[in-house]
Image (tube, rainbow, N blue to C red; front, side, top):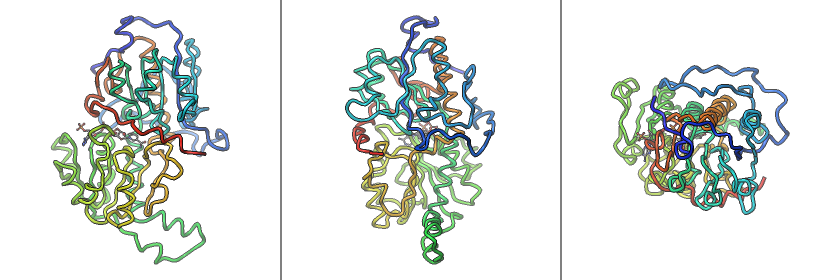
Length: 419
Ligand code: NDP
């Protein structure tokens, strides 16, 4: 496996262990409102050996947490405190990340490493980066580093890493759940029961079978392809659009129809699932114009990034009936302001950003972050598949999946959310 040399050690102290005490700022979502759970529904989680393409799961030297417990919130600390403090480093964990004077901004100023999660993203804009002269690395505890201004990271030679594959399959499961629950109109039916009702006609007047429908993904990477595979047993017709074509063997295994443009894909699909990264090429891809080219009454499931869709165009299309439903778990910004139109638009099946942070996924990305940190402190090269920016350029997975530029703009609005 090709490895990418850790930028910091390459430029300063090639290959040697670094003894200097470092400050690691970790921005995580809030604890549960009632405090950390005393017990969990399951006492163990399944042990996964490998990802479908053969990539190994994270391989840290050891872990200091129990897989299956909450790690992604402030008190969970990604299970990193003992590891970092035993090495003499300082770990600061906060959820206070938006608005003037927030804790994260204060702590960033002398931080060496910042860790953040897409679910509760610390928007690392160019201006913030420029307040942090010691910053060497931004780690995404998950997948999707669009909350980091990648162009600024390139310019300032700040490495960007993410835990590729850690939650891709978790998201694909969420996509299947959302496609089926939306097409069958589960949310409405469940609400009727909860309200004490039994009007079956009300419950089924928007409910269809998925069988026979045309399902298409924008991007057939780790998530998109897995979502297609998972939808195959429902006897659907499967379509995809991507910048690169999948191997012929995969196309024939799943009986896939390839489209060379997103317009072609959306014109024939009943359900479109969006699975490309957010970068300047994909920002606002689903605008009013593209939505008008969709099959009338189609559904969209977007678990990729909120900003790939124009929020008002989506709400308008749901109101007019051009779209029958919109579901997903990604918003812009995050947390979504209380008055974000996607909270109240009709026929939506939104969740907060949860698909990639199931307890199962948390165990994988916490281990992945630890592996990245171990490599960094030991002066070892990082996995190419975890690398987005290295030594002032897009590298590894970043080179393949992202384009230069910045997609963090406008994130200031996140401060408008009140608990
Ligand atoms: P992959 O890198 O495996 O797949 C991304 C795919 O997107 C690649 O096939 C890439 O194409 C394709 N792509 C990139 N740009 C374009 C474009 N302009 N048009 C069409 N296709 C494009 O990533 P994953 O599948 O693991 O994750 C995808 C995204 O999902 C992440 O970037 C993240 O934003 C989101 N995500 C959301 C999570 C959640 O919790 N909701 C969790 C994890 C990820 P090619 O390689 O052919 O160039």
